[in-house]
Length: 213
Image (cartoon, rainbow, N blue to C red; front, side, top):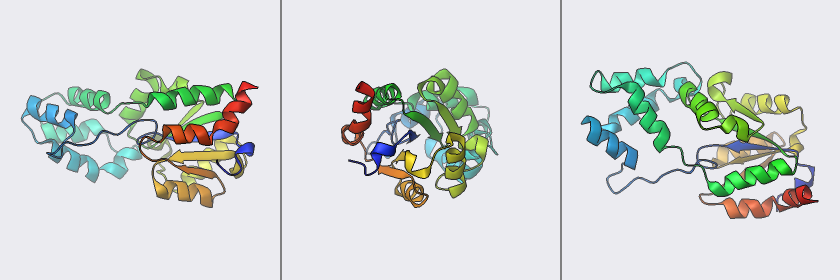
């Protein structure tokens, strides 16, 4: 049960680690897509991951292009757009239970926002090619705002766009610091554990029942 849920009017969803399930690396420390990439290119995907990590802030705030990073890693050996497509497809794994919960919350009249910390190309791919723009009421992407959670300004921007009081907003996130920042602002917060869909549904049941009335 979430204290104050009776006042809730909007849910702000984190994406990676919540709506989008995260794969676990194998014994070699690689994910399936990284292993496939190594087999296809003969290049070390660990080097690509290091390069992406080094550019993380610039990528998430729209100041760098992920294709440039991939091209710097691959040179002319492979097509950077093919590599990006592999990454996008392989790392997109929505939780079907949470997709059903999104639909149920929509029926209950709850406004839903996707808080997306990602680069420009992935944000556009998720919104348009994978239809996330029609699954939720709004997407607030870090590459457009230049703000990354848990920056208080990122939360303030989302709240301003909703036009709601802090206690009417719930953040569902798998990062403790993000939830803590939201609660400090007066929002409700839910620290989402891996595979925590059923517990979340139970916690939101008063809203779902409201929609069934």
